[in-house]
Image (cartoon, rainbow over all chains, first blue to last red; front, side):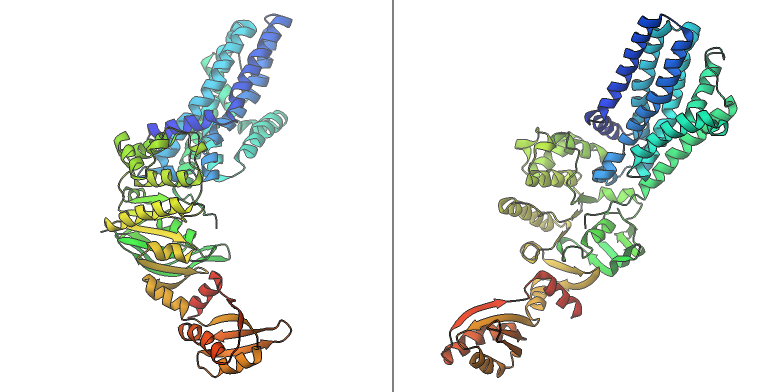
Length: 239
Length: 303
């Protein structure tokens, strides 16, 4: 189910490309904002919530998910080098699962850890905000990585579609239409965070059972389908 | 003994038929897949390598289907045409990774790198490699598990003559060792130099099959077109048409030349200078006007 060589190649491809800069820039930006806000306004729960919810969870986590999820496979499919993985006696779902683990790991590392640090900078984990949003970021990382990894196997424009989903659907539609919130990774993650922290720090519009079912279903289905896509991936020649 | 069998395989993309009802068997030794660009060679190789499902028909390796069957890669080594190959790794890291993916260790990678003479540059990043070096590292990655079948898509593209010779030597050796080696090319001379057996593909169809002598004969026996300029075109035309090796002659007075259609290549090439000498006619220019590979191939398809 996990191939260390595939994982190593994926890590190096992910962190070795120019795109990887975003993985460092966004968390750095979050920390700078957190520090600036703390210096200017002091420790304030509602400001902390605005930064962690409005920037960290709503913008940074999905974008890092897009970069890590699509970046774990799309460039290899694009340039054809995926052939070297596929022409091996390794089950295709193993390749997908390994890449999923790497994408989840990278998304968590570059989104959850900075969120926790930023939370402590903003208000010293007052009202358990830092922990709540870190939990949300960890949970969201799993679903984002799976969804964007799938996007990377089905379309050449995975990054664009990924950003459209993350920013337009979750950012715009979900804030305007309550029904759209049910289909939002961000809300699912908040529901889990709400439960973990006792419902004081964060709230979600989606009930916990619904959120958990949708989270698991989306992750499992996306991963299964990505494995199927890879099994029948056509590597076209240059003719 | 490993045999790739293609049985009535076709592949289409939308309305375009890339491979049209091809049946062939590729056995041990070196086989050349010859055809002009766009003939469907890559499509066929991709089907043999399990990267493309046949729309109809089957592709099997010793009886097992190749499509959606990862276990065939224990026996198949693939050298793709595309250049991309984890440029951020060194040659050694790349080949070691390929060995590990086969469940082998670094020693297997070292052997493969030695086979292609790439030890001297194995610690350089692939991004810095020349085309020929890339090709050799690709070869090493395909050889790392000692496969009985080797599929190479246009392996000589962009190689300089020395690299070409080295690779030919290597492939020849692989063939002699009893491996099934198949490579594609659009250059007759390449195929002729290396392959003991040739399969010709034109416009998605299987146009000819056999050893290179048979293919060569098919190619030289076709009607040839020549453009001839001489000191007396009309007299030369009259003398040539009398011989059965000439099927037709057009005297182009505007351009000042003859267009000759010869049916017997060997006889015509001997006849022309003799006739000219006997009639005291000076030949100013003799050039074949349809030597393009496409015209050779289209003749083969019609034949």
